[in-house]
Amino acid sequence: MAYIEFKNVKKIYKMGDVKIRALNGVDFKIDKGEFAVVLGPSGAGKSTILNILGGMDTCTTGEITV
Image (cartoon, rainbow, N blue to C red; front, side):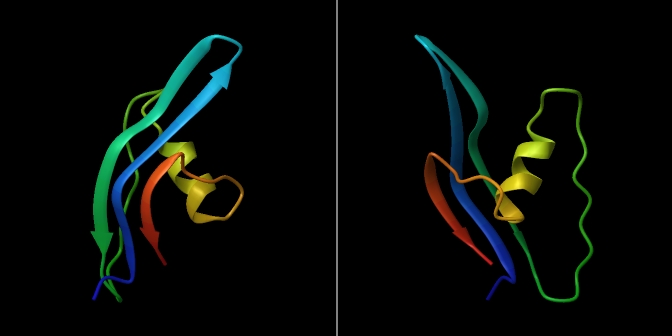
């Protein structure tokens, strides 16, 4: 069983009629004792993933297990 798991996680921010897809179907798992690094270019959704994991934000759809 994964210690942390994202299954088809999506996050959409709505600004009026405009929708910003911060995460679009993210899948990953981290097993107990593993180390993980979140990296990517600006705007890839790194902060969004960490904010969701930290409980500061919620996903629009998908399943998260911590």
